[in-house]
Length: 111
Image (cartoon, rainbow, N blue to C red; front, side):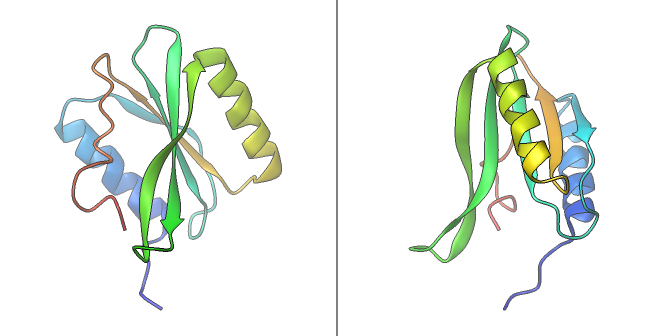
């Protein structure tokens, strides 16, 4: 088993990378410090949003960020609320960028 970063450490590193790229982002819901899963909501500020979650890829034996939903922002917020009700350890980060950037495709975010 390979060592993993704590959720809190990963979130803080991610927010720092976004800040360095001048992309506003906020922790909307704080989850478990060590093992909480993370959802990334990307809002282009036009009342739509996409939701990303890290999922395990069995074929590649790695974790990858996957877009799990997109649509009206109210629907994405309702989906997040349902997920938080099911998993209170879940972190939710909102990224606000008109160009739709999340940086999740950059090296270092896929593991």
